Image 1 (cartoon, rainbow, N blue to C red):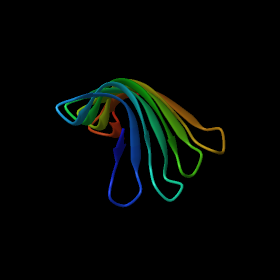
Image 2: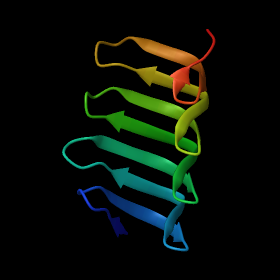
Image 3: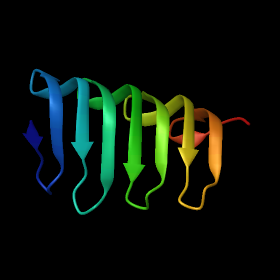
Image 4: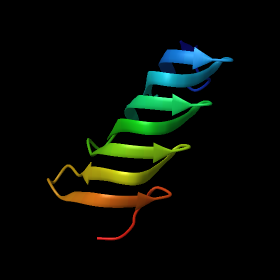
Length: 92
C-alpha cells in the first residue's frame, strides 16, 4: 500500500516501491478511483476510472494516459466508444 502526500491511496501489487501489476488508486477529496494495471508506477494496460463527476472510462492506458481502445460514459448518458490517443478521443 502507498499513502501519498495529499491523501491519495494505492492498494495493490508493487515492484521496487512503485505500483506494478494489478491495483486500485483512490484519489483524495472525492477525485474518483482507478482500478486496473500498472507498469513502473503508471497506469498501463487495461483499466477503469470513475471520475469525481461520476463519468467513467473503461479501456486501454499507456503510461498514465487513456490510449488505445476505450469507452467513456458521461453522467448525462452520452458515450464515446473508440480510439483514444494521449488522453483524448481520436478518430470516430
